[in-house]
Length: 263
View 1: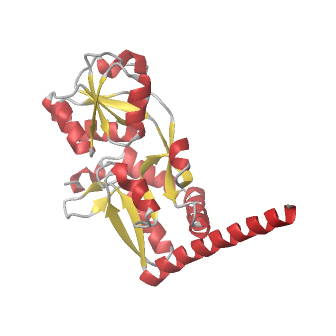
View 2 (view 1 turned 60 degrees about the vertical axis):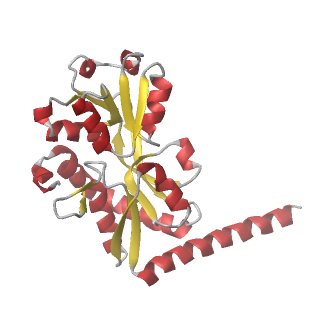
């Protein structure tokens, strides 16, 4: 019985290794690394004036592709469809400001975290911007908008169930709802809220001084691609050790020099 179990385990391990090797070979043969991201999650990813996708994740993806000696192909996908695309093999990895959660980790392997983020809010109301905890926003008169399929949506459902929840496919729509007064608050990751408040000062948009939660952001890879997972792990470790991740954080989260490039 133990012998049979051992043989089964070895067979599964070998099968996974072959699958992973095939994925690496597929990337090498095509000369292309397909990275899924929304392109609508500033400062992680956003569209530049020339039509290209720029941002923290775009820079990181470019460096990964260069290290593999292949071309980068950014595949723009709505956030709620990213994991489905990874499972179908339509993309090789996800780099899109994705929080590592138990539910997502049951569908994909994660490398990281490469950024520690947290939930924050974007609003036009000074009163809401003084909130210290989620219970301060749990009112049935409030309209809260979040990105569909995000941890922000789950957070509102769990922590602010009394409030009215509205979901959107991208942050641009959510921000516009705040500007137009169709929603009171947008709940999103802290860097996103800070960015939107920075680029729309004339709209009176404000955010919190500190995030409401602490959340790890990671790179999602198929759990059936152990060699690709190992490669990305080594790559991320190297970027961290030499200080490149710190440099990216300063460039995209702390500086505003790149704002003129945004569409």
